[in-house]
Length: 450
Image (tube, rainbow, N blue to C red):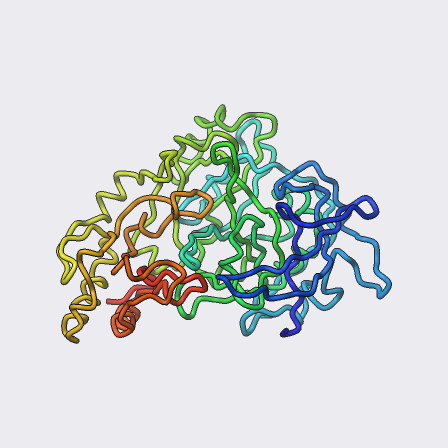
């Protein structure tokens, strides 16, 4: 072990727990990644919610000042004074302390239910925020920054937040667990309980992006964050949260979103008022059981890629696919001829790099290493695994290709010629074969190369 405190779990689904002194104490379970043996055998006791079984339960009351242990530490802070307090001991990638912000104390303010997410590709103007605040039944508004990050073949919604105020819009189990927000303030990442643990690497490190130089952060806690309804269940609207300094490091557009509490009014009844206030500059997304048929916004982290491939609004079709807005499709999606593969339909921002990589494959005499009859496409607007909980596939942007599918299945080393892999990487593509849970057929644009 490297001395890091393990990430704390605020609530789990189906975890082992015991009732103690009016609260539930959860035992940390070892997690297996991609078929490997569990990383830890020891069981660490951490604070958890009174909400049994449901990570998103909102009616539990948590005492965030857990009774002190014999050594003076608190069960609410598994690291005692050694982890998550915003001090120099918070670790992740190199220079973590440079990303620390002021750590919040005990929660004293009221909590708010997140009823609506307002989201844009760019910073929301102050005038728009004032108009949203002025809508009759709106009780509170929380600014945040949010974008989609490609992580191990999944697309997670990563938010950069003020830990002291964003916590007011999370479930009570999370909001009252002060150590969660101290760890986030210290530069670590907080991950929603519903995020697949296969995405988290050795020593609880999470790489936020697919580039080789993407920041790798220590997971400080697993906690329910902000959810949205998807049919009869819920999926994370915020999959992971970092502090605002980390958001700048990730290239998330600053203050491009708002969480809104609409009091006792159903969000759909306020739709016209919101649309008038937003003036087409942002998307209105109810987080209650009104998701189907409502526009949503897709924005990638990393500004250079975003500028090249665009951002779009889309609608959930209810069958695992989405329909991006026609304006974006007409502007960015092209059907063109490329070497080896023939006719492809992709994002115009990615096509020059795909063509450049394939031309180089031909120049190096490796044409036979790519089988055009085993090409599985590029632009396909859908969720990963047709499951909204897994996030949008990068095929929705038309910036990913799947090559030589039969011999390169998930979880295998694959048969892809590593010389071809090197060429694609030099042309700005990340390769799924590098992931913890491998996907060697998959190449995705992760930076602009011209």
